[in-house]
Length: 164
Image (tube, rainbow, N blue to C red; front, side, top):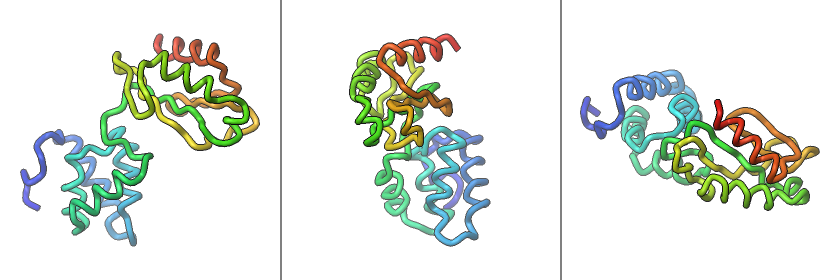
C-alpha cells in the first residue's frame, strides 16, 4: 500500500502508532488479535481507517481484518466517551439483581449498551464477568472496580466521575 491509499481521517500520530503496533507483532504467528487489542488500548478504539492499513501491513484483505473487528464485541469501532462504564451481566451479578443497576445506568446516561452519553463523558458497555463475583452487582469505570452497586450507589459513582 502506498501512502495515501488509506482514508485520510487517521491523523499522522494515529497512523504512526498503528504502524508501530503492527511492527511489534508482525513476526508472531497470527498477530491480528494482539494488534487489534494494542490499537484499541492505545487509541481507545479501532478506527475504520486503520483497517486497510493493518490489512496491507499483514498482507490480509480488508474484509479479513474488518471481520475480526466486527465479530468481537470487545472491539470498539467508535471513539468512546472520556470514561467507559462496564456493567457486569454475568450470572453471579444477575443473581444479585444487576438488571436494576443496568436499567439505572441506561436511564441516567440516556443510552443503551455501546452508546455514549450526549455530553461525551460516558460510554456504556456490558461486561460478562469482571471477576468480582462475591461482591455483585459489579460496575467498572475505566479501570476502577466497584462492588455491591445499587442504582443509588451508581448515581453517586457517576456523579464523582463527572466531577473529575
